[in-house]
Image 1 (cartoon, rainbow, N blue to C red):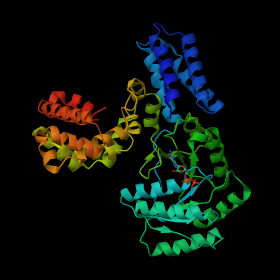
Image 2: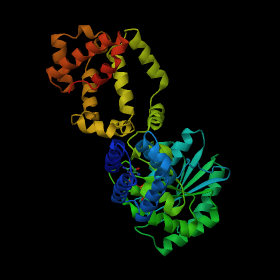
Image 3: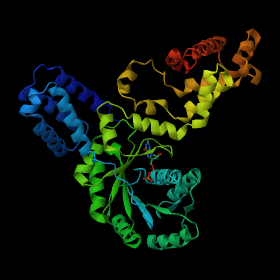
Length: 442
Ligand code: GDP
């Protein structure tokens, strides 16, 4: 999302670090460059301007200029101000009973998907969420919520197709919820192509009736400053309590994330970073600032991995490696774990400096298809072969190649890499090299 901005910042920071003695002029020049980069990333003009002013006020002082590493200090000021700009501390949801969350926004912003994502998240936290479809204009939206709710394993209230009054739907839904033993109710509302009076009126009635603890605006980050003005409109109408910014996985410039808090005064509570139901993350301003500064988000990465990798499986696999018992069945388990992580690109993007590193990797190096090809070869082996790879000789290799639709060369290469891997496992210092080979034949 922020790669262009991160690149520009990286360059300006290198300039600041590189200068022997910093003067007011050097600093002002570097900060001007940064301001331009922010505006180019679609940060609202005044937000960028005021932000840079604040960094400058802190930076231009005797103490800073006389310090040993003035460049580093300025970068630190920048990081602190950026965290503040993004909202300071992470803003939690108010889920005190009766916990009602009203989800609103324009069509296509990701309301329905996000409602289901949020439900899944809350369920994983041990709560009992219920989903309520309140979009009476698009039957397809009701269907969509029902389908997603099923995927998330969360009960969904779907109104009758003939229903036209959204407050009546909400009333019926509350009565239904009584018997569902739920603890959090999430209401997915109707959107529009753009804001219109009818939509806002309906939302106001619903809001008045439900008195939700949380009214969350779902905004598409890819729409940049428009997302910010939409948030302001909804806030004026019903008083939102927070924002969920979606599509932060896209390649848009990301300015919405930076202007949102300052313009609306409302916190970004979650970020959507993909279409899958588990791709909704708490928005942590400090971690996001680190990402924008190319420092990655290791905590976020560990959380994502922890959520998807079964710790007991990982430990068992590790033990087998240490005991030198690792065979193709373990290899297959590991491949499954890796695939569970989803696109590696997104996950590795949380590593510090990864965006730079990525440019140097051969194309397709992180391709899940390549993992799939390797998996296909292993799946074509018999159980006996997986357990005792040493028996896989000539004709067996040919059979495996034919069975998996790959070339004999691919099979040979995988088996060779695998046996080297096993050798390496016995010398722990070489584990790092092994990781490189996990991708199998290229
Ligand atoms: P609604 O009209 O506001 O209810 O929007 P939907 O929930 O139907 O989402 C519109 C489209 O955006 C769908 O194709 C979603 O899969 C997609 N979408 C939603 N959130 C995200 C996200 O965080 N990242 C990406 N890449 N796509 C998303």
